[in-house]
Image (cartoon, rainbow, N blue to C red; front, side, top):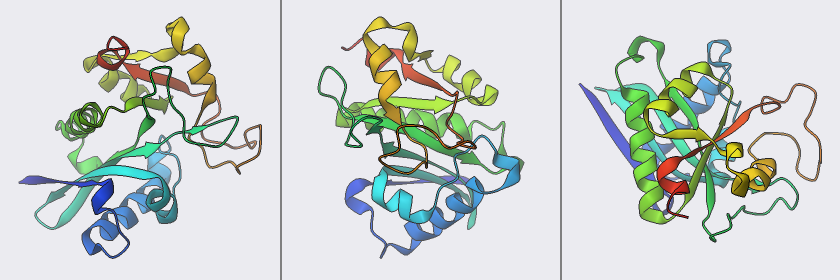
Amino acid sequence: MVKFSFFTLEELSSDNLKLMHVLNKLSDATKSDENKHLVRREVDFYLENLLCIVSAFDNEEFIGAAVVIRCLDNRTYEQLWDEESRLVVELGSNYVDPKYQKNGIGEEFMKIRLNHCEQRGYFPVSVTSSKIVHKIFAKINGVLLNEYPKYKDLCSRVRTCNCPKKQSYHNKNCEMKNKEVYGFRQFIEKA
């Protein structure tokens, strides 16, 4: 039976053994060749930028996790805010073990994180080129954010890659080059 665990910013600590187990498993998953749609992340990155994480276990077996992380402004490298002064966050690193895919776990991760963003007043985005993620977004009111004139500038400023700070261009092999920024209708229409 699949059980979900949820940690918020207030619970995030390197002393939390279950959280550290989840972050290590998630970090390892981002480095696997079978998960090329995930941006490679170290545990330290998550501890520095994480706002919440939801994980799934089947008994004691880790089967997946997904995060909400801070988005930095591509120009200033400071926290990014939208025009309504909402904190811009990314729904990132949505990983589900291949044996458990196509069972609704990824969609459940998305719903839990969107609910958290709504409760906190965040403006969630997701940066991806994954066809699988595109399909999930279509089911839950995900839309290309740059199709809304009001958000074109925001799209150009979202930075979620691993390229060094203070570098105005992406590295040659940057995973985030040429990816699209998605938003969610329920957050766009509230603006």
